[in-house]
Image (cartoon, rainbow, N blue to C red):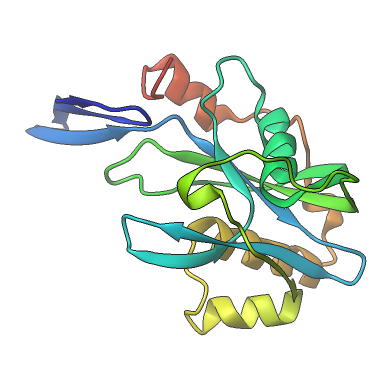
Length: 199
């Protein structure tokens, strides 16, 4: 029905049980997001304009999986550098989610980035329009949790990532973290079934 630069829309005729249905799907390339936390337990958030909702949001650094054959971890490392001018020497998978599975194929992997360092050259001169200026703030984790629960942070990657990190820490659960290169079976399924834009 529509083929765009970032996503496409297709219409499927599907049989669900005894019912025939028509479903419109937004075919998305997928994305990664990074919850970067420093030695003082502060989370890095950037402020970015999001035109579909017409407002600025505080959210973690993130990016589309739109470079063919680039592993998700490499995308996350690149996006953390490009959007925040920060590198991390320790990476884990924090949580995976579907952003809006009722209508979109977007799968997001959220990484936890630790042992941070500021890049000597700072943030590279990449990005345009809403990515040209990305002010950043370091928010203590308890405050970030409260901002989520008060409805003041609404980005799905921020909500899921911050609450997952709080839950992990409350459970003393660093053993619950997956390796940064852990399999991502839902993403593999989407790719194999033609539900990823650009594949």
